[in-house]
Length: 134
Image 1 (tube, helix red, strand yellow):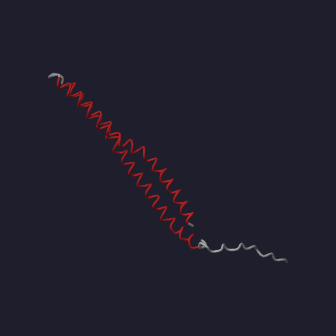
Image 2 (cartoon, rainbow, N blue to C red):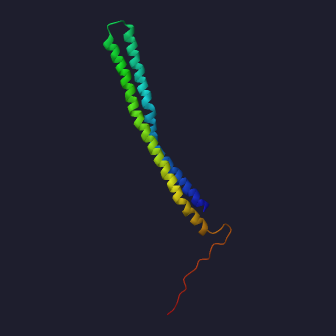
Image 3 (cartoon, one colour):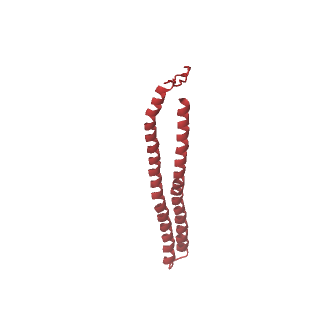
């Protein structure tokens, strides 16, 4: 029986790893998107401050830098928020699936434990059907 339990645990671990592996790209995108947005924010602010340092009369150019900063931040957050939300939802579903599967398998394992021969016991002799001559 312990071999069966070990085999089931190994298979479950492989399946969990496979399902979680599909979620990993979502987490990666969700984590990187705000950083890309932040990079755009920094570039936009550099443009805005460089324009401001060149003197008055360059309001349009300064506004373009601020616009770039805000748009890249918004884009990064627009990508990150739903991606991380989906990642959390899928992770919860995977965990719930395996928890429910384990709950369903416990009675089966207990049933197998009851019918499995005890260690050290002699295996039951094979019985052959009795031939009846008519």
